[in-house]
Image (cartoon, rainbow over all chains, first blue to last red; front, side, top):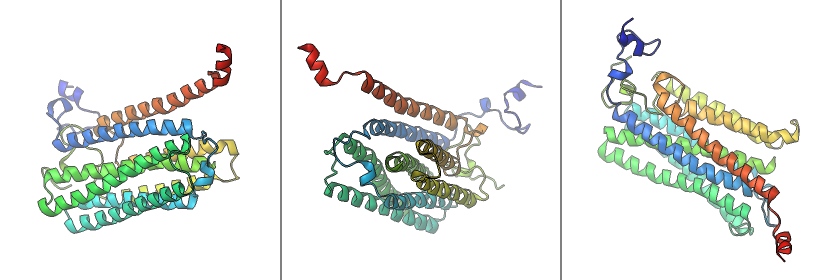
Length: 210
Length: 132
């Protein structure tokens, strides 16, 4: 057994170059990994907002509580919009891999429409709640609710702006390596927002009913 | 397998590690996303059903909801992010594990500390009486 064999991972082919001799990682791997770290730090930020909500959820100061304010069917509709937009975003990623501009535009448009529908539903929910007197200033519970759900909504809105910008880049620059890298980062961002939303609908909306 | 074209996602992972979100095999990728979507739909509907079911012992419902949510997050990580515990994914997986660790510290640490203060801090009116 040679020294090289000892550093090759188990199950690798005999002629495979060991990790120590492969040189620096490709820029795609580095960019993807860097963005992955950003997403994880974003999730850590959300965890602080979740912690604040969990601590303040019962501090309604005599105002309306979650069980009275939240409509489960409405939240299911919001969840469906975001989940299906995550799926179409994945199909968009496959279209990008195949360098198919038409399919990319199609799935990006569907993703945008579903994301915009989610934001529209969320804004009308906020407007209805504030109309009923459940504004962020009413109680600590509502302050925490609007901060957590509003921050997620802001992320989705910025994602929609990013998506439009990326489609403009595909239209003008084509599938340059840098454009493809940015598109990959966008799809990761969009999937991460869906993961945060799982926490939101479980803890905020379903937790209020349970 | 075709020869990877430089700069395309299929050439990634040849050097060190693999970018998250990039498919390992390019065959059946639509199937991967469809599988993920199917699992996610089932788990979401199960969560909404579990929130006010009478079939489960009531105090156990939050635990059931947490289990379903963690399961669905796992489905998203595997089928949408394509993160695995394989050797190409060591960096991504370690970063994810550290992220989960910090999230757990922040959430459960905050809840523990605040609950502890809630129990042990004297109400303000009693404190004022003692100072008098």
